[in-house]
Amino acid sequence: MFGTVLFPDGTGDTASWMYIPCLQNWDDAGNRSWGSAILAFLYRQLCEACQRAGGTHSTMSGCMTLLQIWMWERLPVGRPHRMQQPPAWFPEGDTIVAPTVAHLYERTSGVYHVSRHAYISYTNEMDTLQPQHVEWRPYRRERILGLALSTVCRADEDLWTMRCPLICFYAVEYHLPHRVARQFGRLQPCPPEDFSTSWQLHRLNRQRQKKITNWQAEHQRYIDEWLRYEQNNMRIHAVHRDNAFNEYLAWLGPRTKLCLRPAWTEQDIADIASEDEGDNPYDEATRTGRQVEIAHVLSRAVLQMKLPNYEQPYR
Image (cartoon, rainbow, N blue to C red; front, top):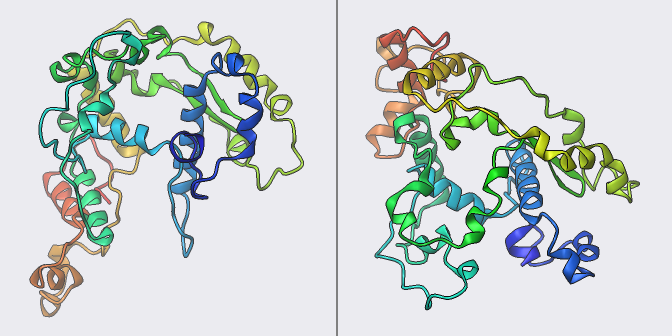
């Protein structure tokens, strides 16, 4: 469970020794916030995976089941097709053991792709994703409500909007719900309150800091902040409004990376010399039926439309 589901770290089916002391007292283990530790570890692994470059082998670690369900319920990219209604759950009894949302994906059609082709398809789909394609509050949908979810799914619901450090030994990652207020049906502040997640924290890991043997002492200030979580609950009482969210997107556009992949050329398609027309990598790939990246097409479209709220074209 620890080595392959909750805290996988790319080493295979082994579990790190650092979790063992937390399990010596079974009653005490049940009182620990394992959910926040899993999130902290997953956030750190996402951060590290997206920064790898060059010849390094990019692998993802952390609780992939959690990440997949989160993604499938919110984004249409890479979502498997459910073959039919999920099988009936076992007879009613303790509500704690009722199904979770993952039960919806117990029977799905397999998705098989050559990884190179799938990567292009997914980046193209992500680059063309619009706000209206996102399911912002998926767990309110009828098919999910009809599952009669386990009471564990909504336990401590009042803590979902707290802003606090999530801690998993060396990894400290902040939970910042004010950046995604729409997921809670709240008005998204524009711009969101500035909050430093500390680059020093992201430099900490078990390889570089082998001399640190007591992470509790090392992170005591963050543990103290965690214990004050009730004081840090996000209190945004205004509800979501489309026009306000559109203003937020207009603010966000010039300040973030709008496309995952860069265009294959910085030159405008319309400016390519006539003798080169049809001989560029994009046209050659199109003629041979290979998948092509859509980033430079978006660049051209945005320039032509001259959208007023974006200072830079899509890249």
